[in-house]
Image: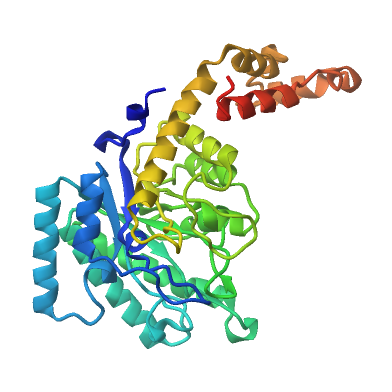
Length: 388
Protein backbone atom coordinates (compact mmCIF):
# COMPACT_ATOMS: atom_id res chain seq x y z
CA UNK A 1 0.00 0.00 0.00
CA UNK A 2 1.27 3.46 -0.88
CA UNK A 3 1.87 5.73 2.08
CA UNK A 4 0.24 8.60 0.19
CA UNK A 5 -3.10 6.81 0.13
CA UNK A 6 -3.33 7.38 3.87
CA UNK A 7 -2.94 11.14 3.60
CA UNK A 8 -6.12 12.95 4.73
CA UNK A 9 -8.37 14.81 2.33
CA UNK A 10 -11.34 17.09 2.96
CA UNK A 11 -13.60 14.28 1.72
CA UNK A 12 -12.61 12.19 4.75
CA UNK A 13 -14.52 14.70 6.91
CA UNK A 14 -12.05 14.54 9.79
CA UNK A 15 -12.52 16.94 12.68
CA UNK A 16 -10.75 17.61 15.97
CA UNK A 17 -11.85 19.48 19.05
CA UNK A 18 -9.93 22.69 19.57
CA UNK A 19 -9.73 21.62 23.21
CA UNK A 20 -7.74 18.54 22.15
CA UNK A 21 -5.03 20.68 20.60
CA UNK A 22 -5.09 23.18 23.46
CA UNK A 23 -4.44 20.43 26.00
CA UNK A 24 -1.39 21.48 28.02
CA UNK A 25 -0.38 18.05 29.27
CA UNK A 26 -1.58 18.63 32.81
CA UNK A 27 -2.88 15.80 34.95
CA UNK A 28 -3.91 15.47 38.62
CA UNK A 29 -0.28 14.78 39.55
CA UNK A 30 1.62 17.19 37.33
CA UNK A 31 1.62 20.67 35.87
CA UNK A 32 1.52 21.56 32.16
CA UNK A 33 4.30 20.39 29.87
CA UNK A 34 3.50 22.57 26.83
CA UNK A 35 1.88 25.95 26.17
CA UNK A 36 -1.78 26.29 25.26
CA UNK A 37 -2.16 27.09 21.57
CA UNK A 38 -4.41 30.00 20.59
CA UNK A 39 -7.64 28.84 18.95
CA UNK A 40 -6.77 30.41 15.60
CA UNK A 41 -3.44 28.58 15.56
CA UNK A 42 -5.27 25.31 16.23
CA UNK A 43 -7.75 25.97 13.42
CA UNK A 44 -5.01 26.97 10.98
CA UNK A 45 -2.93 23.88 11.80
CA UNK A 46 -5.92 21.61 11.18
CA UNK A 47 -6.67 23.32 7.87
CA UNK A 48 -3.04 22.91 6.78
CA UNK A 49 -3.42 19.16 7.40
CA UNK A 50 -6.54 18.87 5.23
CA UNK A 51 -8.94 18.57 8.15
CA UNK A 52 -12.54 19.07 7.13
CA UNK A 53 -13.55 20.75 10.35
CA UNK A 54 -12.97 21.75 13.93
CA UNK A 55 -15.13 21.37 17.02
CA UNK A 56 -15.20 23.85 19.89
CA UNK A 57 -16.54 24.76 23.30
CA UNK A 58 -17.70 28.35 23.62
CA UNK A 59 -14.75 29.15 25.89
CA UNK A 60 -12.22 27.50 23.59
CA UNK A 61 -12.51 30.53 21.34
CA UNK A 62 -14.24 33.16 23.51
CA UNK A 63 -12.77 33.58 27.02
CA UNK A 64 -15.11 33.21 29.96
CA UNK A 65 -16.51 36.66 30.84
CA UNK A 66 -15.41 38.32 27.56
CA UNK A 67 -17.04 41.65 26.76
CA UNK A 68 -19.42 42.08 23.85
CA UNK A 69 -16.73 43.93 21.91
CA UNK A 70 -14.18 41.16 22.54
CA UNK A 71 -16.70 38.51 21.54
CA UNK A 72 -17.58 40.24 18.28
CA UNK A 73 -13.92 40.76 17.33
CA UNK A 74 -13.08 37.12 18.04
CA UNK A 75 -16.01 35.94 15.94
CA UNK A 76 -14.92 38.17 13.05
CA UNK A 77 -11.43 36.67 13.24
CA UNK A 78 -12.74 33.09 13.37
CA UNK A 79 -15.14 33.63 10.45
CA UNK A 80 -12.31 35.12 8.40
CA UNK A 81 -10.12 32.12 9.26
CA UNK A 82 -12.88 29.72 8.18
CA UNK A 83 -13.16 31.48 4.83
CA UNK A 84 -9.45 31.95 4.26
CA UNK A 85 -8.39 28.45 5.26
CA UNK A 86 -11.30 26.42 3.87
CA UNK A 87 -12.32 24.69 7.08
CA UNK A 88 -15.72 24.30 8.76
CA UNK A 89 -16.93 24.66 12.32
CA UNK A 90 -18.57 21.23 12.39
CA UNK A 91 -19.64 20.95 16.04
CA UNK A 92 -20.09 23.30 18.96
CA UNK A 93 -20.70 22.73 22.65
CA UNK A 94 -20.71 24.67 25.91
CA UNK A 95 -18.26 24.49 28.78
CA UNK A 96 -20.58 23.86 31.70
CA UNK A 97 -18.06 22.03 33.86
CA UNK A 98 -14.91 24.12 34.50
CA UNK A 99 -16.13 27.14 36.45
CA UNK A 100 -16.90 26.59 40.16
CA UNK A 101 -20.50 27.69 39.59
CA UNK A 102 -21.06 24.24 38.06
CA UNK A 103 -19.59 22.35 41.02
CA UNK A 104 -22.89 20.54 41.69
CA UNK A 105 -24.22 20.37 38.17
CA UNK A 106 -25.35 22.67 35.40
CA UNK A 107 -28.77 21.63 34.09
CA UNK A 108 -29.09 19.42 37.18
CA UNK A 109 -27.90 21.83 39.84
CA UNK A 110 -30.18 21.99 42.87
CA UNK A 111 -30.16 25.79 42.48
CA UNK A 112 -32.66 27.04 39.84
CA UNK A 113 -30.48 30.14 39.33
CA UNK A 114 -27.56 27.94 38.24
CA UNK A 115 -29.85 25.99 35.92
CA UNK A 116 -31.06 29.22 34.33
CA UNK A 117 -27.53 30.60 34.07
CA UNK A 118 -26.52 27.35 32.33
CA UNK A 119 -29.39 27.64 29.87
CA UNK A 120 -28.49 31.27 29.18
CA UNK A 121 -24.84 30.33 28.57
CA UNK A 122 -25.91 27.58 26.19
CA UNK A 123 -28.26 29.94 24.30
CA UNK A 124 -25.38 32.34 23.74
CA UNK A 125 -23.16 29.47 22.60
CA UNK A 126 -25.87 28.34 20.18
CA UNK A 127 -25.93 31.88 18.76
CA UNK A 128 -22.16 31.64 18.19
CA UNK A 129 -22.54 28.21 16.57
CA UNK A 130 -25.23 29.52 14.21
CA UNK A 131 -23.08 32.55 13.35
CA UNK A 132 -20.21 30.22 12.37
CA UNK A 133 -22.44 27.93 10.29
CA UNK A 134 -22.30 25.03 12.74
CA UNK A 135 -25.17 22.55 12.35
CA UNK A 136 -24.57 20.29 15.35
CA UNK A 137 -24.55 21.26 19.02
CA UNK A 138 -23.40 18.68 21.58
CA UNK A 139 -24.26 18.37 25.26
CA UNK A 140 -21.69 16.65 27.46
CA UNK A 141 -22.94 16.71 31.04
CA UNK A 142 -19.59 16.75 32.77
CA UNK A 143 -21.08 17.90 36.09
CA UNK A 144 -24.54 16.38 35.69
CA UNK A 145 -24.33 13.83 38.47
CA UNK A 146 -23.54 13.16 42.11
CA UNK A 147 -21.09 11.82 44.63
CA UNK A 148 -23.72 11.81 47.39
CA UNK A 149 -26.95 10.07 46.38
CA UNK A 150 -28.80 11.67 49.29
CA UNK A 151 -28.24 15.08 47.70
CA UNK A 152 -30.53 14.65 44.67
CA UNK A 153 -33.50 12.65 43.49
CA UNK A 154 -32.42 11.37 40.04
CA UNK A 155 -36.01 11.52 38.80
CA UNK A 156 -36.20 15.23 39.68
CA UNK A 157 -32.74 15.88 38.24
CA UNK A 158 -33.78 14.23 34.98
CA UNK A 159 -36.86 16.47 34.87
CA UNK A 160 -34.65 19.56 35.25
CA UNK A 161 -32.41 18.32 32.41
CA UNK A 162 -35.48 17.61 30.25
CA UNK A 163 -36.97 21.05 30.89
CA UNK A 164 -33.77 22.73 29.77
CA UNK A 165 -33.42 20.57 26.65
CA UNK A 166 -37.04 21.26 25.67
CA UNK A 167 -36.50 24.99 26.19
CA UNK A 168 -33.34 24.98 24.07
CA UNK A 169 -34.95 22.96 21.27
CA UNK A 170 -37.71 25.54 21.12
CA UNK A 171 -35.14 28.34 21.19
CA UNK A 172 -33.43 26.90 18.11
CA UNK A 173 -36.77 26.57 16.34
CA UNK A 174 -37.82 30.11 17.27
CA UNK A 175 -34.56 31.50 15.88
CA UNK A 176 -34.81 29.50 12.66
CA UNK A 177 -31.37 27.98 13.18
CA UNK A 178 -30.33 24.93 11.14
CA UNK A 179 -28.99 23.14 14.20
CA UNK A 180 -29.57 19.74 15.76
CA UNK A 181 -28.55 18.58 19.22
CA UNK A 182 -26.55 15.56 20.27
CA UNK A 183 -25.97 14.17 23.76
CA UNK A 184 -22.64 12.60 24.69
CA UNK A 185 -22.94 9.87 27.35
CA UNK A 186 -20.30 9.13 29.98
CA UNK A 187 -20.61 6.94 33.10
CA UNK A 188 -18.42 8.91 35.52
CA UNK A 189 -15.65 11.51 35.87
CA UNK A 190 -15.41 14.19 36.92
CA UNK A 191 -18.46 13.33 39.07
CA UNK A 192 -18.61 10.05 40.95
CA UNK A 193 -21.66 9.08 38.87
CA UNK A 194 -22.98 10.92 35.84
CA UNK A 195 -26.56 10.93 34.60
CA UNK A 196 -27.20 9.46 31.11
CA UNK A 197 -24.14 7.18 31.26
CA UNK A 198 -24.67 5.04 28.13
CA UNK A 199 -26.13 5.12 24.63
CA UNK A 200 -29.19 3.19 25.80
CA UNK A 201 -29.92 5.62 28.62
CA UNK A 202 -29.63 8.58 26.23
CA UNK A 203 -31.97 6.92 23.73
CA UNK A 204 -34.55 6.46 26.48
CA UNK A 205 -34.15 10.10 27.53
CA UNK A 206 -34.50 11.43 23.98
CA UNK A 207 -37.82 9.62 23.60
CA UNK A 208 -39.23 11.73 26.46
CA UNK A 209 -38.36 15.12 24.88
CA UNK A 210 -40.82 17.44 23.16
CA UNK A 211 -38.76 17.37 19.96
CA UNK A 212 -36.98 14.00 19.85
CA UNK A 213 -36.41 14.40 16.11
CA UNK A 214 -33.96 17.23 16.89
CA UNK A 215 -31.78 15.24 19.29
CA UNK A 216 -29.30 12.43 18.69
CA UNK A 217 -26.23 10.85 20.27
CA UNK A 218 -22.52 11.57 20.11
CA UNK A 219 -20.90 8.39 21.51
CA UNK A 220 -17.22 8.39 22.48
CA UNK A 221 -15.00 5.31 22.50
CA UNK A 222 -13.31 6.12 25.82
CA UNK A 223 -16.55 6.86 27.64
CA UNK A 224 -18.01 3.55 26.51
CA UNK A 225 -14.98 1.57 27.66
CA UNK A 226 -14.99 3.33 31.02
CA UNK A 227 -18.31 1.54 31.56
CA UNK A 228 -16.81 -1.77 30.45
CA UNK A 229 -18.93 -1.86 27.30
CA UNK A 230 -18.14 -2.54 23.63
CA UNK A 231 -17.84 0.61 21.45
CA UNK A 232 -18.75 -1.37 18.32
CA UNK A 233 -22.08 -2.35 19.89
CA UNK A 234 -22.82 1.04 21.45
CA UNK A 235 -22.13 2.92 18.21
CA UNK A 236 -24.29 0.35 16.40
CA UNK A 237 -27.22 0.89 18.77
CA UNK A 238 -27.17 4.63 18.10
CA UNK A 239 -26.85 4.03 14.35
CA UNK A 240 -29.70 1.50 14.29
CA UNK A 241 -31.94 4.02 16.07
CA UNK A 242 -31.14 6.68 13.48
CA UNK A 243 -29.52 8.76 16.22
CA UNK A 244 -25.80 8.61 15.39
CA UNK A 245 -25.41 12.34 14.77
CA UNK A 246 -21.67 12.51 15.50
CA UNK A 247 -18.83 10.33 16.74
CA UNK A 248 -15.81 10.85 18.97
CA UNK A 249 -13.05 8.35 18.31
CA UNK A 250 -10.10 7.77 20.61
CA UNK A 251 -8.49 5.01 22.65
CA UNK A 252 -9.05 3.82 26.21
CA UNK A 253 -8.09 0.96 28.49
CA UNK A 254 -11.28 -0.52 30.02
CA UNK A 255 -12.65 0.52 33.40
CA UNK A 256 -10.12 3.29 34.01
CA UNK A 257 -10.15 7.06 34.25
CA UNK A 258 -10.82 8.92 31.01
CA UNK A 259 -7.49 8.47 29.22
CA UNK A 260 -8.39 9.98 25.81
CA UNK A 261 -5.68 8.03 24.02
CA UNK A 262 -5.08 8.26 20.29
CA UNK A 263 -7.51 6.26 18.13
CA UNK A 264 -6.21 2.74 17.58
CA UNK A 265 -3.32 3.06 20.02
CA UNK A 266 -4.76 0.58 22.51
CA UNK A 267 -6.87 -1.97 20.58
CA UNK A 268 -6.51 -2.42 16.83
CA UNK A 269 -9.48 -4.80 16.49
CA UNK A 270 -11.74 -2.36 18.28
CA UNK A 271 -10.54 0.48 16.04
CA UNK A 272 -11.12 -1.74 13.01
CA UNK A 273 -14.69 -2.64 13.94
CA UNK A 274 -15.59 0.96 14.70
CA UNK A 275 -14.33 1.99 11.27
CA UNK A 276 -16.06 -1.01 9.67
CA UNK A 277 -19.40 -0.02 11.17
CA UNK A 278 -19.11 3.54 9.87
CA UNK A 279 -17.90 2.42 6.42
CA UNK A 280 -20.33 -0.47 5.90
CA UNK A 281 -23.34 1.58 6.97
CA UNK A 282 -22.22 4.68 5.05
CA UNK A 283 -22.24 6.96 8.08
CA UNK A 284 -22.51 10.46 6.57
CA UNK A 285 -21.26 12.62 9.45
CA UNK A 286 -17.87 13.90 10.45
CA UNK A 287 -15.21 11.61 11.89
CA UNK A 288 -14.45 13.46 15.09
CA UNK A 289 -11.43 12.73 17.27
CA UNK A 290 -11.66 13.63 20.97
CA UNK A 291 -8.34 12.77 22.54
CA UNK A 292 -5.18 14.57 23.54
CA UNK A 293 -1.46 14.20 22.87
CA UNK A 294 0.72 12.36 25.33
CA UNK A 295 2.02 14.56 28.13
CA UNK A 296 5.50 14.01 26.72
CA UNK A 297 4.67 15.82 23.43
CA UNK A 298 5.78 19.41 22.89
CA UNK A 299 3.02 20.12 20.35
CA UNK A 300 -0.11 18.34 19.07
CA UNK A 301 0.71 17.86 15.39
CA UNK A 302 2.13 14.32 15.37
CA UNK A 303 -0.95 13.39 17.40
CA UNK A 304 -3.29 14.93 14.82
CA UNK A 305 -1.52 13.24 11.90
CA UNK A 306 -1.49 9.89 13.68
CA UNK A 307 -5.23 9.80 14.37
CA UNK A 308 -6.16 10.58 10.78
CA UNK A 309 -3.62 8.19 9.30
CA UNK A 310 -4.76 5.33 11.53
CA UNK A 311 -8.37 5.82 10.51
CA UNK A 312 -7.42 5.85 6.81
CA UNK A 313 -5.45 2.63 7.33
CA UNK A 314 -8.46 1.04 9.03
CA UNK A 315 -10.67 2.08 6.12
CA UNK A 316 -8.28 0.22 3.81
CA UNK A 317 -8.35 -2.81 6.12
CA UNK A 318 -12.16 -2.77 6.01
CA UNK A 319 -12.02 -2.93 2.20
CA UNK A 320 -9.57 -5.84 2.43
CA UNK A 321 -11.84 -7.65 4.86
CA UNK A 322 -14.88 -7.15 2.65
CA UNK A 323 -12.98 -8.38 -0.43
CA UNK A 324 -11.09 -11.32 1.11
CA UNK A 325 -12.51 -14.52 -0.41
CA UNK A 326 -11.82 -16.86 2.51
CA UNK A 327 -13.30 -14.46 5.05
CA UNK A 328 -16.36 -13.82 2.92
CA UNK A 329 -16.85 -17.53 2.21
CA UNK A 330 -16.84 -18.24 5.96
CA UNK A 331 -19.35 -15.45 6.57
CA UNK A 332 -21.53 -16.67 3.72
CA UNK A 333 -21.57 -20.15 5.21
CA UNK A 334 -22.28 -18.86 8.74
CA UNK A 335 -25.20 -16.74 7.58
CA UNK A 336 -26.48 -19.18 4.99
CA UNK A 337 -28.13 -21.64 7.35
CA UNK A 338 -31.88 -22.26 7.00
CA UNK A 339 -32.17 -19.60 4.32
CA UNK A 340 -35.79 -20.59 3.60
CA UNK A 341 -36.80 -19.44 7.09
CA UNK A 342 -35.21 -16.01 6.88
CA UNK A 343 -37.61 -13.15 7.59
CA UNK A 344 -40.37 -15.44 8.80
CA UNK A 345 -41.22 -13.24 11.80
CA UNK A 346 -40.77 -9.94 9.95
CA UNK A 347 -44.53 -9.48 9.78
CA UNK A 348 -47.05 -10.94 12.18
CA UNK A 349 -50.31 -12.64 11.32
CA UNK A 350 -52.40 -15.20 13.17
CA UNK A 351 -51.69 -17.63 10.37
CA UNK A 352 -47.92 -17.20 10.60
CA UNK A 353 -48.07 -17.52 14.40
CA UNK A 354 -49.98 -20.81 14.10
CA UNK A 355 -47.62 -22.02 11.41
CA UNK A 356 -44.64 -21.30 13.65
CA UNK A 357 -46.25 -23.13 16.56
CA UNK A 358 -46.77 -26.14 14.30
CA UNK A 359 -43.18 -26.26 13.00
CA UNK A 360 -40.93 -29.12 13.99
CA UNK A 361 -37.32 -28.37 14.93
CA UNK A 362 -34.46 -30.70 15.84
CA UNK A 363 -32.39 -28.83 18.45
CA UNK A 364 -29.76 -31.59 18.67
CA UNK A 365 -29.19 -31.46 14.92
CA UNK A 366 -29.16 -27.65 14.87
CA UNK A 367 -26.55 -27.69 17.63
CA UNK A 368 -24.11 -29.71 15.50
CA UNK A 369 -23.60 -26.93 12.95
CA UNK A 370 -19.93 -25.95 12.65
CA UNK A 371 -19.09 -22.32 13.34
CA UNK A 372 -15.41 -21.67 12.47
CA UNK A 373 -15.04 -18.53 14.56
CA UNK A 374 -11.45 -19.32 15.57
CA UNK A 375 -10.44 -19.34 11.91
CA UNK A 376 -12.45 -16.20 11.18
CA UNK A 377 -10.87 -14.32 14.08
CA UNK A 378 -7.39 -15.50 13.08
CA UNK A 379 -7.91 -14.27 9.52
CA UNK A 380 -8.85 -10.85 10.86
CA UNK A 381 -5.79 -10.88 13.12
CA UNK A 382 -3.53 -11.72 10.19
CA UNK A 383 -5.18 -9.07 8.04
CA UNK A 384 -4.54 -6.42 10.68
CA UNK A 385 -0.94 -7.61 11.14
CA UNK A 386 -0.34 -7.39 7.38
CA UNK A 387 0.08 -11.14 6.83
CA UNK A 388 -2.88 -11.46 4.47
